[in-house]
Length: 181
Image (cartoon, rainbow, N blue to C red):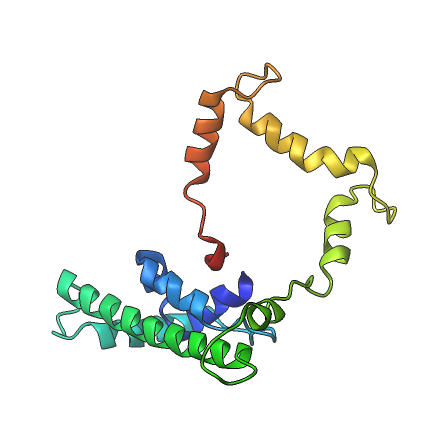
């Protein structure tokens, strides 16, 4: 998440990512950063925002109107679509091992691998191990889930009603699509 945020700040398009699904699609289409980003100062971010703003303010009136924002969103959607198309083409070509322009089920399934990210288990242990003894007890294992349950159980009767669940989901807001997480 930090890498994606830093990347958005670095290129000065964070507002597009927030303002439109197209920006989120563009971020999702980009390959994940494998190295931590360089440090970025607030001054640098402000300079990048200023440069981005000037590029979007096509009538040079010092503000963005709807047509300028629409043009920027359209440009980002076009860029995201092209990048996604290119990435899908590259993935297809990688999976099409016999290079016949078609994927067999075997070729498709051979390209699907699920592996844990390095360090996930250690990070999860650190997160759950409240007493820092290097082990997770049953109480520690359930503590976060029970704390979340308690937050949702507004009337503290030990049961989550449909109304409490609906209220919790409304507070949480919409969930991102699986490819945007």
